[in-house]
Length: 200
Length: 200
DNA sequence: GATAAAAAATGAACCAGATTAAGAAATTCG
DNA sequence: CGAATTTCTTAATCTGGTTCATTTTTTATC
Image (tube, rainbow over all chains, first blue to last red; front, side, top):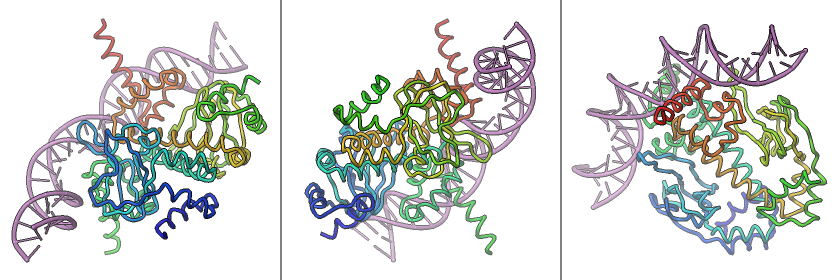
């Protein structure tokens, strides 16, 4: 029951849902518990479901030929997570989606969601608007990676997502920001120096 | 008349439009000619219209405090162009959108498009699907910039968009790929060496 | 609470790519 | 055409960030 509330609060920010609308979505949702280190997606397998995070934390990352990890996305409460490309095209995934903590999610299959959007204009609209927002967000991240220094990227992210910085391992954050864990460690150490000296 | 055909061909790949649907969109479209070096958007001004390119070429770029340009997007025939963040939120732009050649575009205002999407589920669906695709595309570019070398990024782009490589100035391409024009020049020169020596 | 395992920190050598400064080619446009 | 402007190239030098190897700290597990 009330488990669906956060999801509908989110959707409600963009479209007005009545009880029928809600039931229509609920009908295709399943709830799942995911233990830390479990995977919601793996390279080679089609990512059939998208997940809405009720509690916990995830990251989506790719491992290249040299065995180096690149994190494309984190997700905590009130975020969606999947290998999105695999999900919307229903093609084999290239990312791992792994739980960083014991988590609870609401899941829905691609064909169910697509049918829901076709049937109900409100959901189509919601996912249109949020996809456009996600796109502008991604554009900002592109700019950040091509235009800013490693330290600037870290500071920017820390200000915008202090909660995520606390919750995810540092090597995962480094791989999201496009730098080595060693260098992130160095940045943090430099900063500690800068600020605490002034206070002391 | 037939000027609208490329746009409707594009939309037709995702939703089936009848004549009424088409007229509904045409009603909010205006056609515009843009000379080389003219701007469709400028920092500080709200980007009221989105443009669909019938002919010509554009780039969207930002100039940072140090006067360095960063290109976020190119657009040639059959692409849309705008400062997308400014367009969807109707807030002041941060990008220049500049014509690289004399061009022809179809333009529509944000509020007209939003009303069209509200009114007609098919357009809502079209823009939902294309926004999602744009997002996965942006994710790939993020990965490319954080995970690949400058040379790899250039080769990748050259293979995917040989037409764009031919048409845009090299400094603009460099600023899109996240490297200096000098370094792109070096890469090209190195490659020339690699391949032509083997043939000679 | 002991022990193992994972994560973070440190430091030195190294390199991809930036910066700077000129000059050479190519375009533009009167 | 021819001058001005824009774009591209080349080369020397510099640096932000990587790599690799080791140590310290934190976290997980029985």
